[in-house]
Length: 383
Image 1 (tube, rainbow, N blue to C red):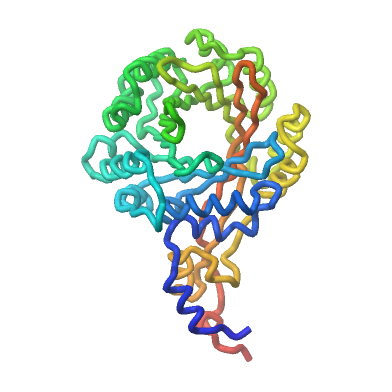
Image 2 (image 1 turned 90 degrees about the vertical axis):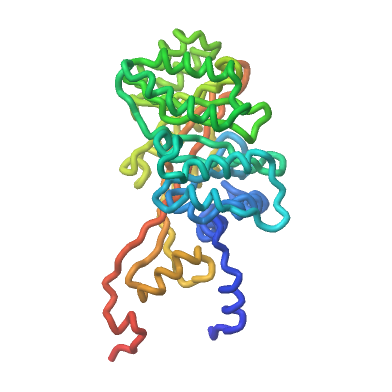
């Protein structure tokens, strides 16, 4: 088919440098049983407000497995590797996008994080931006901070708490004194091998809880919750630990703090790349979740076949412009593609409520060098 050069030029002039370009590139690979057309439209709307640089370290889909509705929330991993802090600090909203204070908080934090000798540069390794797509507009980002330091000893408790104090200074009233005190108690009582993996501020929720993501050995989880006096549903927590125990002996425990530690518990089972691609473990875990009525058969089938790769392909206009340009400049000596894998599973346990199971799909970008003959790169006909 002959290209209309005027239309091609117009497409190039309308290049989308936002993170929406990344979600648009892999949209054909996402089945309707996981994300509806209307939900994907909202995903693209939200992603259009995030700089494309924030998608280069990985972007994610979050699927609720036990509900029939095909919808997903999204998140981004932002690091300094691709100037994510600088891109967020310089971000300008697109179109008539409505914002709330959480966007301005994020922009201020990114600017501080981008300072080479600033306090956040020393304490923060990365920031996750998480969006609840099904919530009411405007969609506010929740922020999850990965501390730069991962101390191994109780003697270094002060280093465990340093990122928390740094963020409380930056976020101001978003973290109350009561929540900060309760969070510090959680860190003080961590087992010797326990780690603070992330600090979350759920700005998209009112009031906004502080979330601690703690890396613990399986045998330490129940004792830790009992020592803290968390009013959690411990028998059901034990049941999920037993369910996932054959796949790993380490978990990420999510605690919400809103003045005090809340009874809602989240348990993450992370998968290594070897486990999730190919999906031997994924299929077994989904089978267990279906048996407990925590996953629908349609979503199980879709997730079992979701891990794969998406190459740039023939439709260059449907690819992020920066990636497309580098590929063309290399004369296809470098090929751009995305790898899709199931990153982890999560079960939420809350007293008096049904268990909720979630799956998270990671999408990571890679470059692959090719060995095309020189004349092929220069588009010379072979003889």
